[in-house]
Length: 515
Image (cartoon, rainbow, N blue to C red):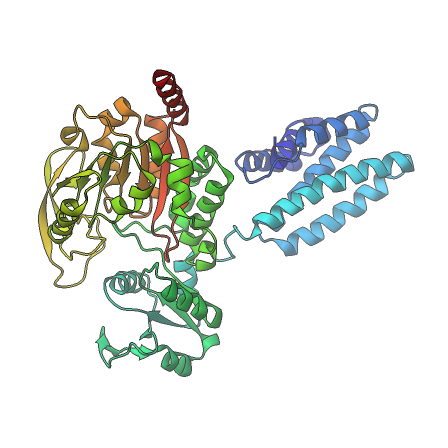
């Protein structure tokens, strides 16, 4: 039981005769809110509550007053939690004066000191929990787009291309003016973008002043030197990287967050380790705020992912859905020493050609390179034909792509049809917004083989909570983890799903058979 559980237990145990109607209503609201909070670190809350009961069991009237006061104290910290510092300060001062003046005559001094020390300890732990989580709470504005629509600062966009087109389209729909565009110093070639001359970063700072402009990052990168430059600019100016989905038009804004808060919290409860919970909360807060500071120090070394979570050393046959040019097959190879074969899906013509070239060179395991999109059934789909790593499915809900963008028809198929009758140890899903359909199309394989899964969570705004819940609903025996690579924005955030119990059993069985 964590601190919030303990406080919830205290509040729940307050009798209706010990609080006013207004206090009871607030108690029920707060108890409901606390019940859904799961950020406590676990501090022996049961013993604290038991100690409070023992110390006060012979002082029933005082006990009720004290526990009612604990409620009021918690209510004060919830007000702080919600940013109502003006109200909470006066509220707490008034309640403190009332409690001290009314109860000091009843308590003996030593007993009063013990009770108050315990009370202060409970609240200090709760306050430390609030402070610890404060960095994970949204600022006073509800989300980035609401903030941008009300700011008086000048908004300038860093970068051009498809990402900038998407962000600019959203800004225009929401009445947000983008004043200029700039590129890094040394990369300006005198060209224009949306009818404006592209400035250098130095020109933008000189024109608007660092303190008077907001920078919107409009491209993605994982390159160390580029990330270093982005973080440097974020220290000099107010910089945000809007979370615009790779697929679809649904934005991760406050409306979406509020509507799906129960699902978002449910996913956090399902995650199996503290690191996953920290990464998950950071990504959620980044998505709402666009503040890239939430992404710092949330990335992982994927050698640890392959070795410690996925246990890649046992893989003999795998599937790579969204194989690009074979980059992730090359990445997993050093950790999967027993690897014999891989089924690879890649829908883009140019990427598939590179994948085939790699498969011909690869001598340690066999690669079946299929020019297919991963889907729930056989079908023909329309894709962006740009040929880059993020060639995406174009559906009716897609954010409009750049003018003149090429589209191509692609054959799609389920993994169940291609891999029927085979045993797979691992499946990777990076299928540019089609993850849920691809999972549906590999249901039989997952049920039959219990492979480890790596699933991208960043292509659609709702993927971050819908895909983990989907996996848990269909395969409750799987343990869930979240990890991400170093990337701005929060791309390459993945769900890892493994059946550890079966893996251990299989290893024991294999060891026994070897003996």
